[in-house]
Image 1: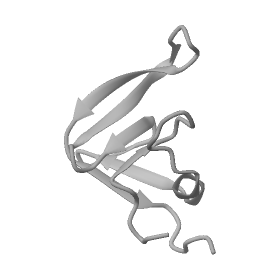
Image 2: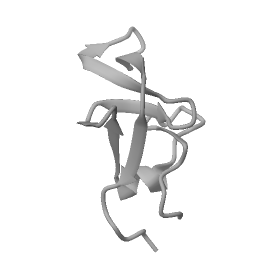
Image 3: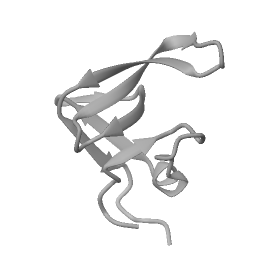
Image 4: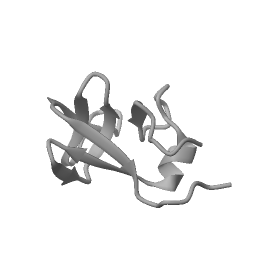
Length: 83
């Protein structure tokens, strides 16, 4: 695995952008300079994050999300990749 997180990542297993190896390694997100812990999906090249809105769920049981535009800076929380 590369030392940089993927350009686009989702924590929903049904998404085509789901990457279990990257999520297991731990990806942190800085959005507009602030550390965010409620990010459901992000895209660096397009400059957006999808944030969960509390504990609210939609009718299919997925968290309600809000898309916000800005500067996205993903990073791996640990320094060593899994072998």
